[in-house]
Each structure stands twice: as structure tokens, then as C-alpha cells.
Amino acid sequence: KNEVEQSPQNLTAQEGEFITINCSYSVGISALHWLQQHPGGGIVSLFMLSSGKKKHGRLIATINIQEKHSSLHITASHPRDSAVYICAVKGETSGSRLTFGEGTQLTVNP
Amino acid sequence: DVKVTQSSRYLVKRTGEKVFLECVQDMDHENMFWYRQDPGLGLRLIYFSYDVKMKEKGDIPEGYSVSREKKERFSLILESASTNQTSMYLCASSLYSGYFYEQYFGPGTRLTVT
Image 1 (tube, each protein chain N blue to C red):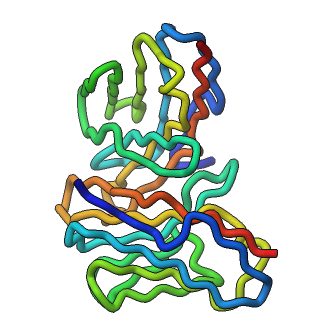
Image 2: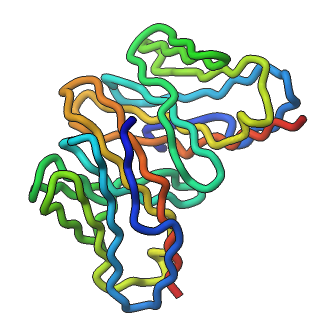
């Protein structure tokens, strides 16, 4: 079993829909990251959080430390949101290393 | 803005060749990382470096070596390329902040070994 599990693996939505991507992890963490990877490979960091909730534009990330679970929500989805979304955790004892989920491929159709 | 650059976006090499992948960051970051990304496996850490001339093995170091002679540059070396090293290679850098830090990624190099 991977230390970081994402669901779903693939998600297709219509423009305007509310989207949720889930991330569960099995180790104690000091921080969790949500990353976005567009076709062509470049990865950008969306959020880094250790508790509660963060919001940036139409993106919202939440984390429940007790349940070892995080969600990434996209409101009013748009075709330009189509990308791979990756969850990564920084373990309490892993130093500078991150452990990554396999990613969720999101496709938003017009 | 932090900029992480990689020497090539696409590379095609033959089995047995020695391959160098270069990564340069311009923000004076202490940490630098090399990952490979394969379908169904996600990002896996090959090596990372926390200072000049310092390195640590990641999860899949076999068949690879690294060099960090200057703080801004981190090189990944495939001593004798094999077809199972065909992959997307991503470099990243970060500050060492002890608790919170963010990794900044380069654009990736898609390597094909034939």
C-alpha cells in the first residue's frame, strides 16, 4: 500500500462543475502539498498546508490531520483547469523529502 | 520568481551511452532534487543534495549518480543508459527552512533510450 493514496485516478467534468480530489496518507506529516502539472511536464505548487483550510481563487484545500486526509476542491471548473493534480506529504521524520501520490488526471470539457 | 531550468526538454540516447542531465536554480536554494516520473508510479526520488558536494540517495538511486560542485547546479548522470531509464526526469529545488518549505520544479526532460 502506498503511503499516499489519491482518488479518483481520473476525473472528467463539464465546465462549471464543482470538483473534489481526495488524498489519504498513512504516516505522520508536518506538511502536505498540492501540486499541478500541465501537459508538457512543468509542476507548480498550489498549496502547502498543515492544518485547516486554504483558498486561492477558485481553489480550496482542506486537511484533517486526525483522519490523515486532505481534499482539493475546484469551484466553477474551467477547461484550463485540465491537468494532473498531485498530493505530496512531508513526513515528520523524512527530513527534506516529499512522498508523492500518483496523481489525478482532471479533464474539464467545455 | 524562482527559476529552475533543465538543460534539455527532450533527449534521445542509445543504450550504453553516458548521459548528463543538468539543472540550474537561481534562488540560492540549499536543497536540490532529481526525480523520475513514470505512468502509474508517480514521482520517485532518485537523489537529493542538501549542500555543495553533499548528496543523499533517494528511493531509486541504482544506475544513477549525481554531482553538485556549485550551489546553483545539480547534475544527474546515467553512467550507461538502459531502456528502462526511459522516463520524464524532473529537477526541483527548495530552501531549507526546517519545517515548512516549498519545492520549485523545472520543466522536465523527457529522455528516451533506444
